Image 1 (cartoon, one colour):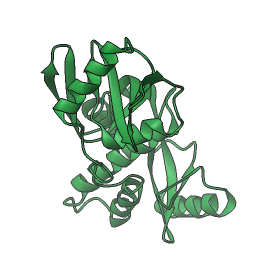
Image 2 (cartoon, one colour):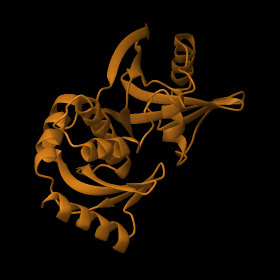
Image 3 (cartoon, one colour):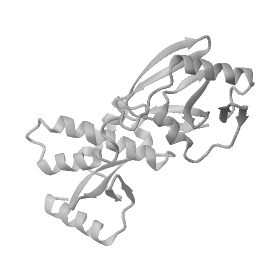
Length: 239
C-alpha cells in the first residue's frame, strides 16, 4: 500500500467506523492490516524491552485521530491480556520509536507525528499521578498486621481501627493501588496497597509484567518482606 492509498484507507476507516478505543482523547481505529516494516521493529522491541514474548503478540495497523490529525501506527495486541496492557505496550513502543526517529532524517515526518500521537495514549511521565510510596516502616507494619491476623494470602484486605477484614476486590482497587504503592512481597505473596480515609487496603497480585523500559530494584525491609521499587511502567494482574 503506497502513501496515497494509505491516506485514503485511513480517512475511509475513520469516517465510516466508530473508534475501537478512545484513550486520553485519542481515537483508535484497529484494522486487520499487518504493517510491513514497523511490525518487525515492534516484535524486536517486545522481545528486548519487555517481559513478553513477541510470539504472544500481534502487531496490527491502527489509525489514530487526535485534534483533527489522522495517522497510522502499529498497535500491539497481546494474547489473553486486557486492552489496558495493549494500550500501555503500544504507547511505550511509540514513545521509544519517536525518540529514536527524532534524529533520523530518513524517517518521514508523518511517521514521527504518528508515533507522537500513539505515544500520548498514556501519560508521558510514569510518575504523573503517583502519590508516593509507602515507607519501609509502613510496609513492615502492613506485613506484621497481615501475619498477626493470619491474612497473608488473602486477595483483598482492609486494615482500619476496628481491625483486619477480608473483602471482595473493588473494581477500582487495582488502579488506585498502582498509583500509590510499589509492589511488595510478604512471605512469598505479592501485594499492592493504598490508603483511604481511616483505612489501608492491601491487594494481592499474581504477576508483574514489564511493559517496556521499566526497572525494578528489590529491597529487603524485614525478614520475609521485600519491596520492589519500580521506575517505569508495569502491568499487574490480580490474583
